[in-house]
Length: 160
Image (tube, rainbow, N blue to C red; front, side):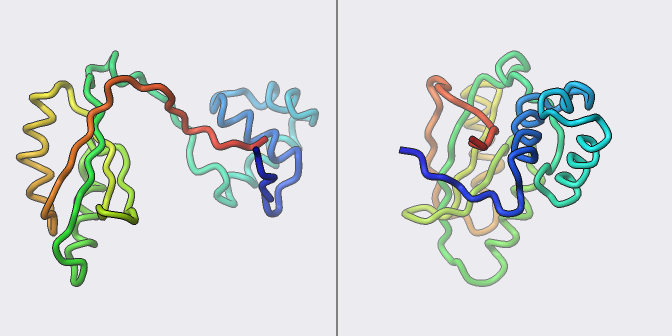
């Protein structure tokens, strides 16, 4: 069952623009205007407003990690011994600078952080855990789960 989500301040045309650009960030303005039934100038203005208001953070290309050579996708659950002081902030700043870490979430439950990590192979992942993750500030335990097969991966939000 799907709940109606209130998209504060957005009308159906705004949502149509957002759906179109999250499906294809390179859609030409003329095509976008056609898709949302606007003329080009108002369509362009709406898109620029949505960008300025932060609804569109950036336009990116999604790359195929396996074709590029990252055969391992891992999820590492990280625990901290001490949550006080500067360790969590230093950990988060360090994580932001490590390109193999695609995502980092501060979570509830048994672990403090969930990291999504890519590596070329299992040996490289093991070395990454040993040489990088274990040396991050505040880390006391790491539990890894390896993806056997990616069933679904999307960055598209449900803007029905």
